[in-house]
Image 1: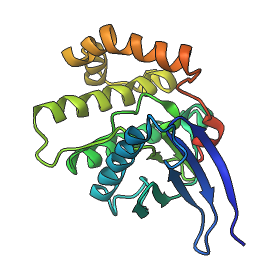
Image 2: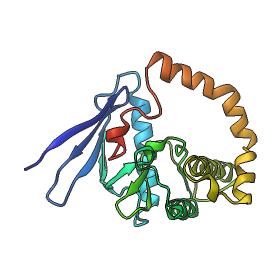
Image 3: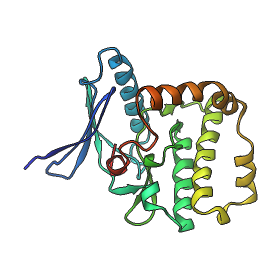
Length: 217
């Protein structure tokens, strides 16, 4: 029997968990996005599809099941979001760093690892990443990509600092202490506007829907 459960509904559309004969999948539907944001919702969906296709076969990231029109269906990864799993085993962060290196080797910067629901703790204690709407696929891995990749690393290290600060190496501490100029400019100019719009006007938060998003968004 096919079952559907709405996980998330916002201005950019809906996210559903659906059962299939081979197991659950996650379906993103932009048809219900606000008409004035549908172009952006579809653009973000295309970014996600491009990134996931570049990561095909990697493991611990979603696999594309189907994409077309206003829908993207991807595989389900069973796990709990970082802030619920609260990993204290250093091996979790070793696995997360390894996974992130493999993303970057394939020319994909996640660009949204600051949000804890986008990192999962799987059943075997390893890390998985979801929600690739803001991801960037850059096969040539030029200078701007390397900056974005370094920011991915910094965001991951911030989570490690929250849960296992004693395990941070001197090199990791130096990375945390030296954000890129682009990051500093973003924090000073763009982020305050983003937070005002999303939190004050739209009522969002970085952990919105975390109980379900962690089990997939």
